[in-house]
Image (cartoon, rainbow over all chains, first blue to last red; front, side):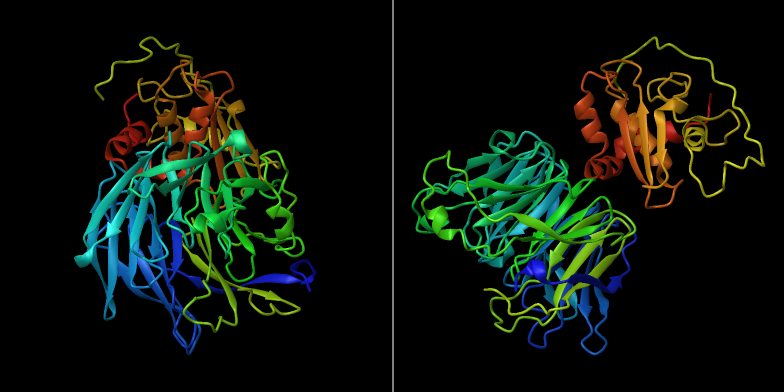
Length: 381
Length: 164
């Protein structure tokens, strides 16, 4: 049965209240929410704090376990757990990025990273939790290595964007950095094996890219597709057909536009997140709604066809995507962030429920369960 | 501000007489937001304790400078949207973004949270129309600007100055 035939619903399970200003970002802690480990979520806000929420296994409700309020002096714009689950990184308009570690029931700030001239807008980890990337209003992306003793060494300052950089992400399994910006472009950065990082591709209007601010990006499970969202009211799907070659260190695999989802949103799309489990794309927008999208039919059926694709001019005839459901009034105000709970690679037992967290200008975080009449079926690898 | 005045001799218009709304106006239910009400919030009046929003450069109200007029405000009650189109005093007004910030701040607490406010400069009224509009409606930039002490002070001065 394909996703299209199932009758999906997004059911509100919990509303997490506590922040006193808009909530910008949420991040599920890897390794939690499976195998009897209670789910843990971090959130950050315009109220200058970070909150850590933990699910009570007995009642199912989420309780605020810690408020991290004595480090950042301005809006905390972004938070991200390291894939190892050991550290939390937070990026703030106060121009710093902080690293946190759990210490018993408490969280300690173990390092404060300075370098950006002003507002830091996003922070991201690489897959092995050894590198950190940050970006901000000063139009740059900074790359950091976490050294013994939690000192951070700057490996490079990546310049090329002409306006503030809204979000930075690492590829899910390659040390390749992706950044998106108010300059309407997405840039791809790699290392030339001499530790010099450079921009290897710019996705902008000249190659079917966005026509306004690109707010966020997210990868599918295998990392050969990327979705981006924008103030131009569209989502765009991109694909890197030669990714396997790149993993062998053989040159660079360019990303190509394969699909634009337009006509679904009528206000800025702030967040997009691709589920690593079911391939469902969630978006959060300034119209207070959450939307879910999925590929028509089987995503992999075009694999053989695409292998033959050589010339630049060959149009990729890949899957099209459609709206699965729209949750109107998901929040009372703008939805700033949507985040699927991660299926954890170290725990083969996937959570039975597929959970989505959302953060809003209304100051709340909501936890949603994706349900379908036909059941969600076996998770995809 | 150490900047010199960018538009030293603005054209000042006479303030319009406000027409009082009849108390029993059947077309004006309490829960309806209308452009006149927003206009009043943004631009009147001598009687208001908090005073007008000022053009940051001039001790005149935005109404006197024709930056705002009743026609520049449209409300879509059904969709919960407010669009404000203002006219900067000159084509290169670098204060356009500050005026926009002031308008947004002043409206912030006046309407239900779900109202969406879009603020733009009138078509053809500014040399960098597109970039000003983009900046005015990027809520992350707006949030960051309002946390910046210098800009915050400027906005507060515009919003809360009391002398005429």
